[in-house]
Amino acid sequence: MKVVLGSTLFLSILVSCGPDPIERASEEPWSSKNQSISSMGEAGTSRQTPMVVDGSTVQQSALSVLQQATESKNPRLRANAIEALRYAPNTILETAVRLGLGDTNRGVRFVASMMIGDEQLCNVSIFLEPLLLDESKSVRAATMYSIYRCGGTVDMNLLSAMLQSDNPELRGNAAVILGKMGNVSAVQMIRKALQTESTTISPIRRRLINLQMAEALILLGEVDEMEVVRAAIFSSAQEAEVTGIACQIAGRLKDVEVTSTLEGILLTPDRYPDEIRLVAATALAEINPDRMPLEPVLRFTSSNSSNLRSQCASALGAKGNQLSLGPLALMMEDSDPIVQISAAGAVLRINNP
Image 1 (cartoon, rainbow, N blue to C red):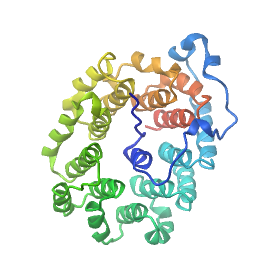
Image 2: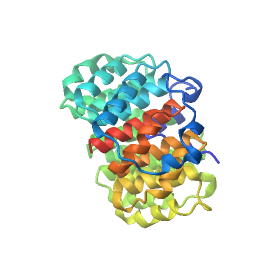
Image 3: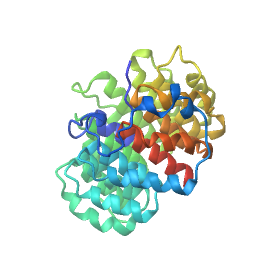
Image 4: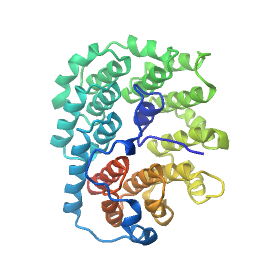
């Protein structure tokens, strides 16, 4: 079973419901780092043993990896790089965001637009104005979010219409944005949308969107909706993606009630897919870094799956342990550029918590 989850909810929306078909990153490498995984240590042993590295040096390497990726020909790499740069100095992040706002790919424009609001980059909010007329409703909604977060006024009608759309991307993005805006007047809009089912959206996609709406309601003060998220963590094996998204939400909301559950998922390899175990590990680290054991996560630094290596890097970044900088420095030389980006983002997160 293969479950692909983005490093953030927005990237998972970008990939699973997203704007354009995006080619597998490893099929279009963007850098000269083409060293094979097998050459990075006998049976991965050097990757599993933490080593001391110079924080400043590895930080500069991480910034170099991500700045290169913002100019990649692959839109998925550009979007992931902008997301990973949220822990970079503001001057560097602002440059990447400005580049992303003018990107030809609407998924990249969406991520760049959201980043301004998320990180309060109001110095560059003036560049958002043209995107209020973007051909993509999701990009226009992200633009409205960041304008609102920077003190501007916006018309909520577009977001209300998106919530009722038969397009899963629009429904999900609208819910996420309304929750992050923090305007409690949106509660009734979201409740109404939950009662409106679309026959054109698959059952599994509806469940994912409903989880996004539950998270939005929680952010708007409807804390009882946390039970919806907790219940979704125990979804069936056939709905592993639902479990994964629920774990991500629990991590973002720092729900201490599910700490033991997440530990159980991470430490039960015969019951849960490795992808879900790593998502649970990341969520656990978001809630309480001390509760995430390093050993079962470090094993994935030498996995044959680039997806698992990438998720491993994200978990290490969330853990925030300086001893992880050694393995992450090696992962920045991975053969897969998505892994390089995830590792670089993790380095920045550890050095700039």
